[in-house]
Image (tube, rainbow, N blue to C red; front, side, top):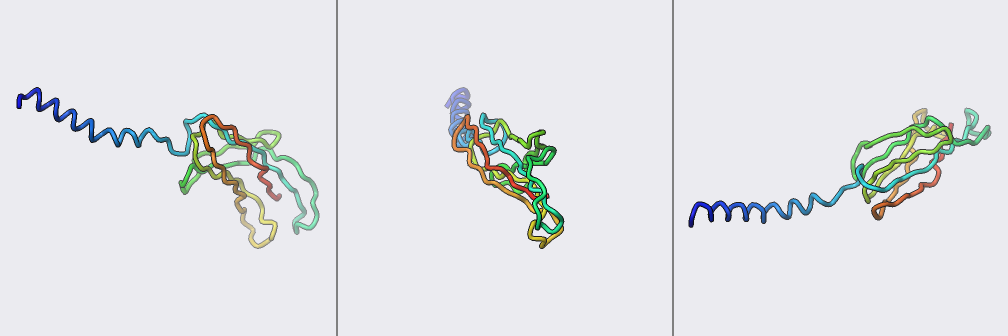
Length: 138
């Protein structure tokens, strides 16, 4: 076999071996870079210190909202709510996401903040998905 044919054969074999790897890398995992949006609002229920009297209900501004991409353990991004309590995460690929914020524990079992979580599935490209209000206690 000539040297040129050997090189051609080796290149062909490498391409055949790399093809499955290249095809799997084309599938995008949940996360940034796509064309979908997840959005919603944070509704604040402001109670007295014993959670027996509701003082006020309003959409909260400046509240951190977090997003977890797929099966990741840590959040991938965060954003603060706008003046009217709205938030949105843009440019997402199809997949499963977990959106959350923190609330006071209305059961008074702990002094810590507890997460209020909404699981969201983006089924296809170019989706705008509205999440039900994330209701927190203050």
